[in-house]
Length: 293
Length: 280
Image (cartoon, rainbow over all chains, first blue to last red; front, side, top):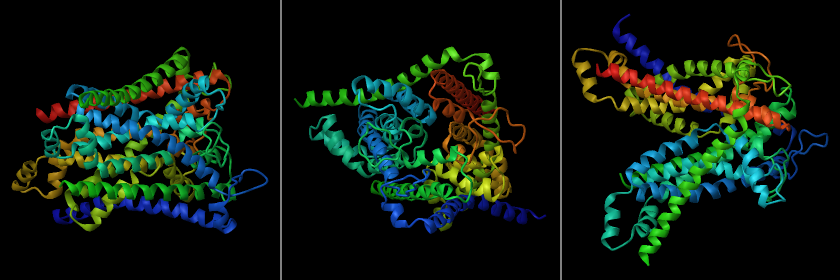
């Protein structure tokens, strides 16, 4: 075979591997769409999206997904309330205050937090954080939204802090120097110059963190309970979309039944929510890159 | 006054950092306290049992090793090939831009969605069943974005002069990539691979979704075996009400973390080897 033909073949093969990512996305959408379509043949989309009761595994079946969405939102909001301020403050400290030595030690430790398997966080939430919270919140149930929410906040903190720090470090030095020249302190410079200048990058980090929180599974499957409930009360057991998928997957649900299809319908909704958030985040980061290019 | 506000602000930001780090310390303390006493040689060599004190992780540990080895074998060639295409061949075309955007988005899709893809595609449509192969294929898709991104970064660090020197000697593009660029990028590629695999080894949700079992009393003997993995075994033990099983879960976590750490140690050793060879 001539060298040129070989080169041509290799380039096509490499292209196929790169194109596999498009096939993956297409595969996800196809698998979810086919089962969701069949699910919607049996349950109206209005009932699915607006119903307030989710009991597909009981004899009195209801297919309203809102309790699962509410559970997901409740845990995610708690996680974000923890992760956003702490992540940004950590990023401000690392980018504007810390000596290089501290930064070199702290960053790998923060990355360690991101590398801990989520099932470990679940264990931590159930056996450490929940009992700890119960000592001063006696009404807190053994399964609840608060404890997994807090722990999830800890898990996504490194994501927020490292992306925010990247955004802050990309702010040109000249802006900081101008601010110092006008007599501003480091705090004034950080809060009134650097953070606003890095705003779209920080927002992108927030959105990515939100998407991560919505899709997180094991922490809530272990520590939040399995009771779909339309509530904003963080002290009682709830169930998230992801935890529901796990619950059904653990049981022996035969293919082709409506119970089996519910996990794909819930998965579709989850996919659309996170995919939307990811697109917004990517767009924001691109825009941010242009600002100081 | 301004100085004091500045100082307070610095203390507040520093203390958030301290809180985060002490939470990590609490997590490690909690697990060691609960699990260390349960950790023993029989715990490693025994299989699952209904009796908490006789139960071990052998089957799950073997399952994890099988799945991870196969995941690496699938993700490495495909990921490196994709990265080479994007970095060396098509980086300017519109299609390559689209693929890039797509990979960035895939990297942020929740892992449980990959589990649903694996269930619909590998387990059902392609008839792999709830096998090691189906699990590894699912995790390989999940690991691909990380492998691709880190390989691209490694390729980018190879100086242009190396490529030009190779071309000047009459080498073709592929010869240049295969004999010059890839060997130089190898430490970065392998580090990225191990990073991706150490994330995969902790993955629980996608494997539960494809139907990996929570109770399975044997180690896999082929890629078609049914299997369970360490994090699923841990999840199974955590979900039981008896405290004895909680201790098992903590000990299982310690084994999982030890596996994670040794993978990272291997990554560092391999990278050092390659780097020394590169210099010699």
